[in-house]
Image 1 (cartoon, rainbow, N blue to C red):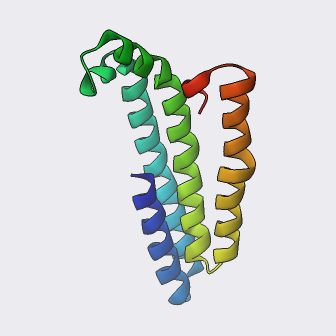
Image 2: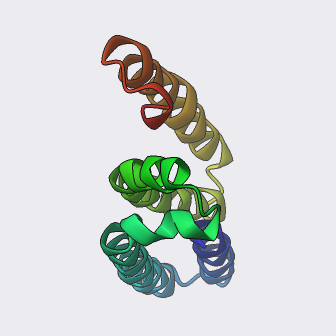
Length: 131
């Protein structure tokens, strides 16, 4: 869902700026950010409060259900970070700053995400939960 909001942001901002209306672009960005925050909070809260039963969607084995429950809070954090990054990248694309969006994506995934995942998985011994 976050990427849908990123696409919306890109389209609305580029249309408003192309029409010579930066004020409409600013309003569109604010509206999309508010919608994304509402979606992000809703999904994260549902996932956080249902993480003990979410595993049953994948398997009836208690071990799998337990592993999914352990990963719930990490998935919530991932949803929050990924949602914000997707919307802001969409705004950058819609503003004609494609290179900024590319740098943000590279930084978010390779300079931040990969090292943090490696530290969580191997240094802090969280295994698959850290990844």
